[in-house]
Length: 579
Image (cartoon, rainbow, N blue to C red; front, side, top):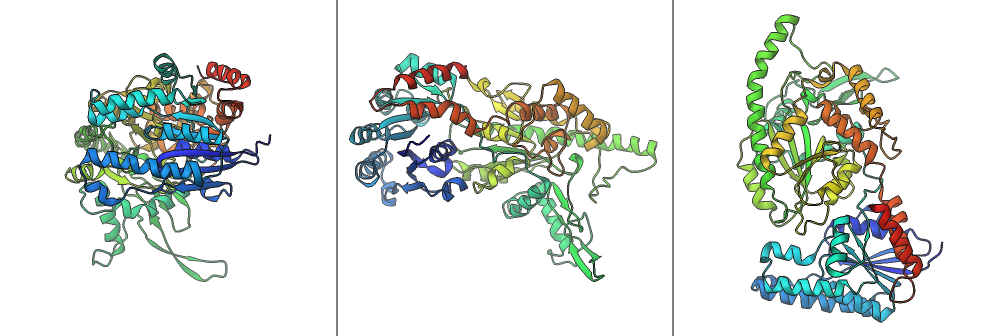
């Protein structure tokens, strides 16, 4: 099908931090003969598909002058909007080629909606809104619901939202609210991950954690991760000593090549993997590596990060108490077996019996509250919990998710009507998720099957204990590796598991008919959840969903202001399919 049309995508924010709009852009660019012009603020790098596409053109909106930030907040906001209006008017009325469609991300609504409508009139284009949330509800988080500016924003958003020729939204709950409250007919386009979200092979995970070492081994923390890297430095002699042969961290081994010449090969170790001198990378067993829990946040008021900190503190106390009991259990086992149980697979001198694993909490993202929380985290003295904050390149984020054990979402939703994209990404990477409860979260998280839903820090801590308490030493938790594979396959079959060609099921170090190894050997329940995610969530990809749901809306929009009859019919059918 040849459309030969120019499309605009407007994001009044950092385009590199707007994954859904990036995916829209790529999908639009794949239509034959199309040109996509993105109008957005700069900052983070977009995904590779956008950078490399010859028919995608990104135009950056100039930032307001820095000196305006020194003004009182209300005056700054007014001048910022004026600056945005002037910049946008230049682009949408004069600089950009005339479009056939204008797709706008909402929020923010001010001043985007009015200007997009004006541009659509000017160029005789169709105006389409993608509703991620409500702008006025986000403003109310800091200003209060009864603030006059919030009320004005509500009226503005309701009026201009009705002027769109078509709309998408992210949940059924939002679709109902838009229709019942404002009379806006929207098509539900659920977020789905692109195909590059998948489980990460052990080799790639090893290389990733080697590259992430500068962000993990940082001063100011006192925890098990700090001690791990201190041990690495001692073994390499970087602490001023001669170095010792320890846990396999960068050990030197001499081997002979095909011609009989000696070569010195250095083995490497990360917190979760070991590369031996023969270049084989192995994943440490669960008793010798931490469970990696990942959470992505924008560090804004609509995500209460205190919940995770409090849960981590409680978990650390529980793990410490359990660790004091574990030595007595080990003594009993050793006296009956006559030997001390060590991990023989990767050279790590670690006990294979422990009640709760260490937790490495990796928090990705950036935002206004980040620095204050980092200071608070560094002041905490934990034994079994380490927290690190990361800002990753777009290409590294899927790789990190793909080698984690569990995802955590603290998204609360200012409107109670949107869903966190981070959970979709985690599902795409095969991760079970613990998610904060709010009105429509059950549209995404199947409680007890693809994840767990919590309402407090105490409940989150209990869920972490529940998921990881089955860890009694890696494969032994399942009665041996053979038993573990058998039980996981049985669980997969009982859940009518389906194969997903987008997962790295054949990658080394992965078991269970897919890429669930990073979760599987921490306990049976989390292994079963990983399989459920792999079976029901990983096959749901953005490209297929966009072609089925979004494409008929875009190309069913006719030449007049309103939808063509074909577009209307397609929207009715698609809305029924989404229910």
